[in-house]
Length: 340
Image: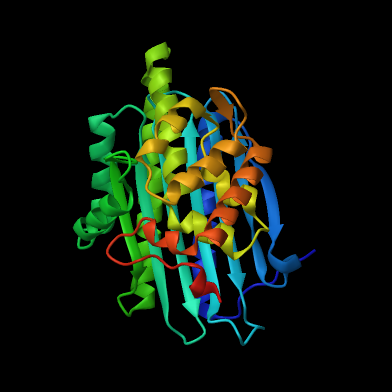
């Protein structure tokens, strides 16, 4: 089975960028941890409309779970589609040590058949236990990469990653540009590269320091991490519009899309949050809970990811208006309509 690629020159440049960032991040993490990532390839419509490759690892000495996904989906042969192509890197790293923060990075170029296009650029630091120096360092690196846009991006990110039911954010630094285009593709392409490289390099440096300096974790620190990973799971599956869109558009990469989920969560803590959910999202949480094993600490393996993906699709098929309850920044992120 072979993948095809988008015909547009801008799509080719966008795809080359996200592939280069993928290679950069995987190489740095492999060097730091000493364990090789495994590559999995997936195909959209048997490759006729593209697909992707994801590099991942889990349960190593350094990383509880890491997934670095790159994809390009295109519809050059389908005149009924508004979307021409979408090229993206989406990555999440969850280290083993509770004093080492998780990170999420997403950069994508989306092009419409009309010829218009835009970038989606996200980078956010997600510590279980906040380290002020790491927070400042990550923020400074992004500010240096995009000094004129940092304030706007931070404000958008703070809105997007806020969890109303819990009255708090996921993460401590949120850089988020939605539907971004200055009108100059080359300048925007360079901006996306700077932000991606700054986020990757700074995070790897933060992770290396944490691993070298961190003492043996305490039981209290491990409990903080489990609770935070549960919050991360909750935010991704009940609020994250990008995750939901990916699951609703097709079912050919469910495990890859849910590669952002942490390796283990506390089901009992999830149950305690149900009363804070608005209708019908409380029913979504019920579906997610039903997909989990009947015990306190749950391991989120590939089988569970598939059940969770099916639960999300079933909920939004039954309650399409509840998509309006999902996260947004200054602009509402693209949803399934943009892929039709």
